[in-house]
Amino acid sequence: MRVDSRQPGLLVGRLAGMAEGVLTTGTRLRRAVRGWATARRFAVRGDRVVFDPDGVYTYENIELGSDVDLGYRPVLMAALSRIRIGSNVMFGPEVTIRGGNHRVDRVGVPMIAVRKQAGDEEHDRGVTIGDDVWVGTRAIILQGVTVGRGAVIGAGAVVTRPVPPYAIVAGNPARVIRLRWPVETIARHERELYPPDQRLDDAELTGLAEFVAPAPRSAPVTNPLTADLHDR
Image 1 (tube, helix red, strand yellow):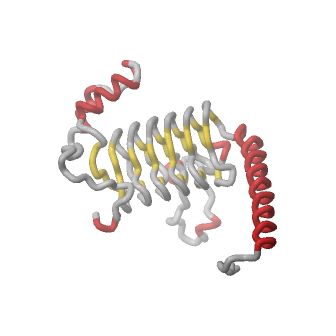
Image 2 (image 1 turned 60 degrees about the horizontal axis):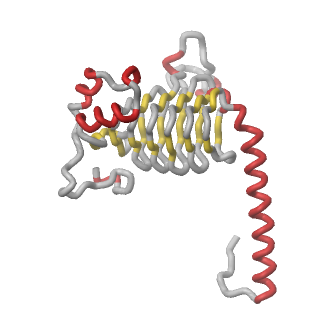
């Protein structure tokens, strides 16, 4: 449908404004009612969870921590596996997380007709997202991926491999661009945010040293959430 952008008459404009107000109020009420009705369907749901009721969810297989914002119209699907999301996690619009997979190796059977069999967990792995993670707009996280605590997933990234804690990843397939901070700063952040028994241990911190630390503040740093990923 095309809309004529010319200025409407005064009466038409007022009527259109009133109609828009009624429709907007109706939409908000419908979304609120749907949200109230479906929130209890999540397998686990912590406090202060914000989710778009018009998103797509396999509710019973999704576990959410506290202070989670799933963004605008996400797709979180895991028919048989689990999607586990920690606390203090935020999504940009239209993020997709897909647990499980379709088998493409069965000879003589259409792919749509292949059903999961006992011992077939390799084709039905879940997704785990740690605490304090930011997932950018339209990122896609596929089965079997674990996103480490404090990581940042760039907009449009396609994540097929585990993401280290505090890493910034971008691209298709996603790769580590750099760490959010030097390892020493990550250790201080951990001390300030988590009790001793929940912090990354020395071995985990040492393992992060192989990744690139941020450039000094005086040097220009490209933001992986807004940069053209095709240039990488």
